Length: 550
Image (cartoon, rainbow, N blue to C red; front, side, top):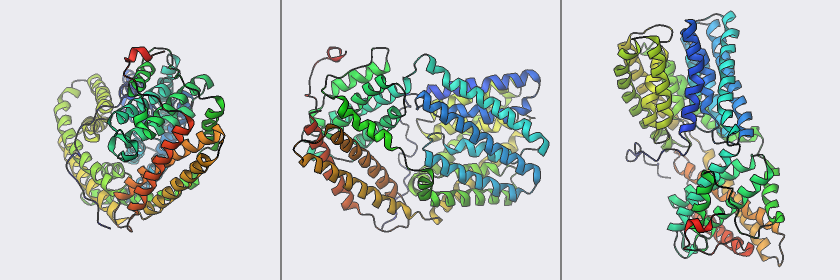
C-alpha cells in the first residue's frame, strides 16, 4: 500500500470557530480566577500550580447534557487529581529525572487511551498530561501531598459548579445546540446534493460533516433527561437523517428554520409528521443497547498506548540528554501529537511547532508587563486562558499561541525565572518533542486500523441486510424499521470515520477500498428506500422560514 502523504498545505488554515467556543473560554476564566485571586490575597500564589489542576477541569464536557456533564466532570476531576497525586508521590520518592520521565510517559499513555476510549473530547488527554508531567518536577515531600491534592480537589469542585451553573437558565441547552448544528449541516448537504440522490457523492466533505454531526447529536440527545424534550428533538434529528438519505426529497428551508428556533428562545419546534410512539421506540431500543464495555474499547487502542508511552519517554530522555531543565515540556509536546493516524499526527506536529514558536514570542513581549506586579501576572494568565479557548477551535496552532506563554508564566507563580532560559528551553523541548514523538508514531505500526475497518465494513453490510429484509416484508413493524434505519445510519458514520483513519496510517496491508465504496453506495440506497417506506420525506418548499415556524 502506498504511504500516505505528509501535507503542509492547509495544515495551518483557519476554520470557523466552534459554535460554543465562548462556553469553555468563560468557564475556565471563572474557574481559574477565584482560586488564583484568593491565593494572591493570602500571599501564596506559589500554590496556584495545584489549584490549576482542578480549575482546568472547567474546559471539559461543554457539549454534553447537564445530567451527563455532571458525571463526566466528576470523573475528570478525579482523574486529574489522581494523576496529580501519582506524580507528587513519585516526585517525593526519587530525584532521578529518568525515573520521573518514565512515570510521566506511562501516565500520558494511560490518559491518552482512557480519553480515546471514553470519547472525552477536547482538550482530551493534553491537559491531563500537562498537569501530571509538570507535577513530577515540583519540589515537595510526601507529607505535603494530601494538602496539595486537597487544593486541586477544591478547585475542581468549584470548576464543576461553574460548568453546571448555566443549566439553571437553559437546562436543555446542550441538546438543543447539538440538534441545531445537525439540522444546519444536513440542510447544507441537501442544498448541494444532486437532484438524483442515487448519484450523490456519498463521502463528500459536506455529507461526512453532516453525518458526523447528526450522529453526535443522537448521542447527546440519548443521554439527556426529560422525555418530552427528548422525543421532540428525536423527531428533528430524524428529519436531519432523512436529508442525508434522500436530500432531493428534503426541505433545507424548514431544516434551517428549526435550527434557528432551537438556538433562540422560540418554543421547541414540532415537525408536522406522522411519527408515532411505535416508530420512536426504535430510538428507545437503541438507547437501551448501551455502549461496549470499556475493556473491549481499550483493546484496539493498544498501538496508540505504545506510541504514546514510547514517544513521550524518548522525548523526555532526549531533552535530558540536551541538558534541558524541564524535560516535561518535551514529554507533553509528544503526548499532544498522537491522533487517529500518522497523517493527522503529522498535521498536529506542524501545528504544535508553529504555535509554540509564535507563543514564545508572545511570552517575551508579555514578560515586562507581568513583572510589574503579581496582580498583572494573574490577569495576563486569565486573558491567555480565554484567548486559548477562543482561538483553538479555529486551528490548534492558533490556540497554542496563547497556551504556550500561559504555561511559561505559570512557572513564575512561585518566583520569577530567567526568561531567556525559559524561552530557549521551551523552543528546544518543542522541537525535540515534536521530532521524537513523530518518529515514534512511524516506528510503532497500527495494523489494527485495518482490522477495525474490516469490522466496520461487516457491521454496515449486516445492518444493510437487516434493513433490506424489513423492506421486503409486506408490513414491517414501525419500531423495527426505525431501529434498522438508525442502526444503518450509525454504522455508516463509523465506517466513514474508520476508513479515513485507516487511510492515513502507515505500514499496513492494502485496504479494501472498492468494498468500502460498494458498501457505502448500497447502504445509502437502502437508507433512501427506508425513508420512502416510512413516509418521512418532506416535500421541498420555497416558503419563507417564518411561515414554517411553529
